[in-house]
Length: 262
Image 1 (cartoon, rainbow, N blue to C red):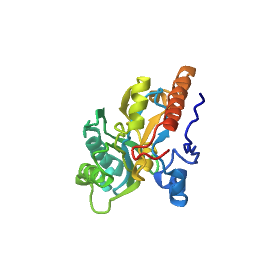
Image 2 (cartoon, one colour; image 1 turned 30 degrees about the vertical axis):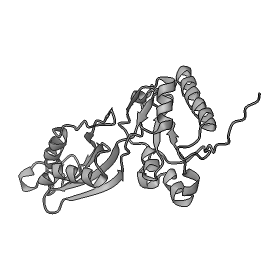
Image 3 (cartoon, rainbow, N blue to C red; image 1 turned 180 degrees about the horizontal axis):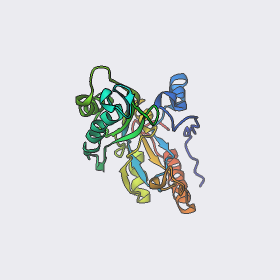
Image 4 (cartoon, rainbow, N blue to C red; image 1 turned 180 degrees about the vertical axis):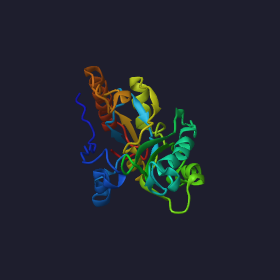
């Protein structure tokens, strides 16, 4: 007796500019130009997850703060005001902010707020009259971007004065973990996959916002991402392939919840 598999639509999506500002993403362009190509029951992002599932993702928000002072000769600093010294209060507020660790669908997220850049100074003998501080914030999926920005502003605005500037230079929403989706449950149960939260931001957020459940699953240790030791192992490649291959084959023989073919 022969058995044939029901046809399914399997789409591979390749796009440019993933590790850039959200506004410059190639996937964002695809969603704008051809959203029908990206519809589906589930999206799997090949992010490094050590061949386990990292569900959802945290949102990202970046603020640029410009603090101003008064330029003067460094031998007579009392005639001016050092803008870089002013930044100490902002940096301390960020450093002491602490972190939230909400648990959503069994996944613990861990927010972070860090000063990721600082730029200022005129010359070795000049009191600087301007400094720019860049703050990066990763927020959990139980907050939207507006709530995250409001909280971050509450930390830094008490240290701002007339003439200072604060601007959001990059923002991308978070995504809820899609661990209850039946296809994700099959992956977890059939392959004994460990489930944790994605603490960084990934394009699962774009798929989630478009109504397509998405997860992160791929070879590579996420703790080594963006380091000189970043690599993948054959075992993780094989495990990822096996899980996804099994999922595709099982989807071909299983009806959708509404009874239609995939």
